[in-house]
Amino acid sequence: MSLISAQDITVRFGRTDILTGVTLAVERGEIVTVVGPNGSGKSTLLRALLGIQPVAHGHVTRDPALRIGYVPQRLHIDRTMPITARRFLSLPKRCTDAQAGEVLTRCGVAEVETRQLSDLSGGQLQRVLLARALLNRPEILVLDEPTQGLDQQGEAAFYQLIADVRRDSGAAVLLVSHDLHVVMAASDRVICLNGHVCCEGAPDVVRDAPEYRALFGFGTQGALALYRHDHDHNHGPGAAHEHGPGCGHSHDHDYGDQKEPHSHVR
Amino acid sequence: MITITAIRKNHTLMFDDFLVRAALAGVGVAVATGPLGAFVVWRRMAYFGDATSHAAILGVALALALSLPIGLGTMFVALAMALTVSALAAKGWAVDTTLGVLAHSALAFGLVAISFVPGARLDMSGLLFGDILAVSTRDIAFVWAGAATIAALLFWRWQALLTATLSEDLAQASGLDPNRERLVLTIALAITVAVALKIIGALLISAMLIIPAATARSLSRSPEAMALLAVLIGAGSVLGGLHLSLSFDTPAGPSIIALAAVAFTASVGASRFKRH
Image (cartoon, rainbow over all chains, first blue to last red; front, side, top):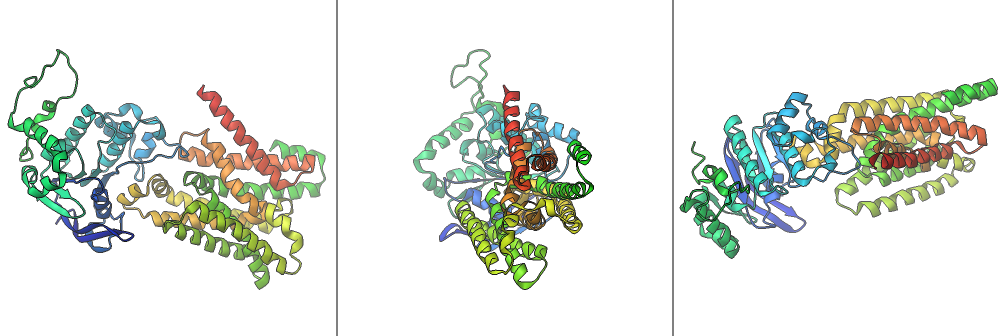
């Protein structure tokens, strides 16, 4: 049985249909990426799947006992509530100090444990949110543009971490992203959304689909070119441009194997 | 407690009695308003407290007209108002404006309605500012029963309430129902208003909710510390305010709030000082 599925759902805000006739299922252990332009209903789709957003039509099926790790697109932390990152990890289910320390270290923010949530930077908060989502052995991670506020290196590490979590725990991942060239390759399945499902399939299939090209138009040519450049030429480090010794900037090759379209068949 | 001992030395037994009763009732109110006030601050529900407590005056009029216990009438109308406000907010009404309209019209209608009840005119200032120096043993029992109910309710739902307050979306994804948690707070607010009306009055209930919690904010690093500190600050303001009222013959309710406000200013100053 699928972990979460939507059957022909329509979501309406006032008189506007944000989503129409969307059918989608996430299976155990797979990475599904939802891509689409702004206003295409990506976040709304996630919220509908989680039961946050009521649907006007259709059904969402989800085991009530399903352990979900959710990272929202942004979390506004009101300064009026004093709360440390450690205390936040214990909401709503309390975790031990050992668990909290481990998960924060894994997400690269061990040092923020005793800091106030409202004092964290956007990137730190995003990692703390991921840390909280990883607690309680989630069966599915639902991530809404999770790399916002992260620098390139952080972003690469973030996707690597998610791939590791999937490999180690078998958790499924449902991801919304606009980082097309990075994300698509790590996914088992890509769903191209624009109020409805335009096209869907393995990353390279979607990449070549006319619907996808029509939707993203010229704006994506660059991203696609980059994507092809990365994979079709398969050059070694430093082949395309000069690096000084010790040049520390994040480079696509650092996580190149993860970006291969078929790397999921491990 | 020093103040009470000092008072004991200087005054007659009768004085002693009503002051102890006033202190007990006031501290009971602080126990209820401390943690609930923290949620009012976190969720930015200040006007919500106003609307609910102002509506309580309408409840008094209703209870007097129908010869029902005052506590029952205020609880009923406060709950009705709180649920209305909650429902309007959920429907996406402009919360600030709606609450402003509701809060002040509830006050106006309540006072007009009271004036129709024979013999109730005299009590106007008691309704607005409370009459903490005239509480009976029964009032104390009522206050503490209410405070105990609220403390138990908040303790029981604490983790879920905090999660839903931080983010309703995160709460929902964790399998919680944010609407249910909001209802818990709404009911707690109605109970608080019902038990606190006689003690500190419709106009000052919001102050007792907001000021001690806001004072505790700058001195706390965890939500739990803030809630407990709000109780202590509220209780301290009650005891100190009663002392002030006795020493300078000032109205008791306003003296309590004035002292809490001074404590708030001091706490802001202290946290500024600490930061630099």
